Image: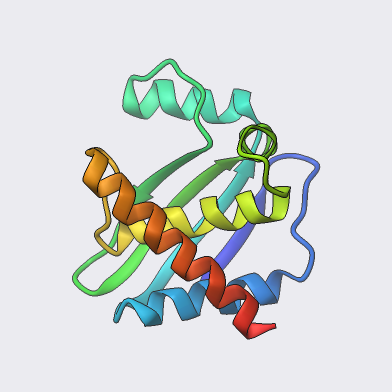
Amino acid sequence: MISFNYELDFEIQNEQLYFDWISNVIASENKTEGEINYIFCDDDYLIEINRQYLDHDTLTDIISFDYSVGNTISGDIYISVERVKDNAIDFNVSFEEELKRVLVHGVLHYCGYKDKSEADEVLMRSKEDEKIKLFHVEQ
């Protein structure tokens, strides 16, 4: 089950479209959907998570905690809406496109994709692009 939780004045319209898309992304990777909680927050909220659990003192757009077992993917994905807005401007894309990229990024981590090395990052970006296209197919 996928859920969206809001810790700020922000809400995704047509949540079900996003739930269905994320479910399709998971199935396309031959994984089973467990419990995936998205928590939308601001920079202050997320930097506190970053400090407390990861001992990092930097801004980020996403932090994910993976609770997957075997092929069943589960976890908590924290997203800073502020970072997503700023990144959309920096990357010259719409907020919606950048939001989709971050939403799918967390799930792809749970599916086993990494982004620490340059080669891993190239593959992650390719997978993000591939999965974002699935959203458009479903509408």
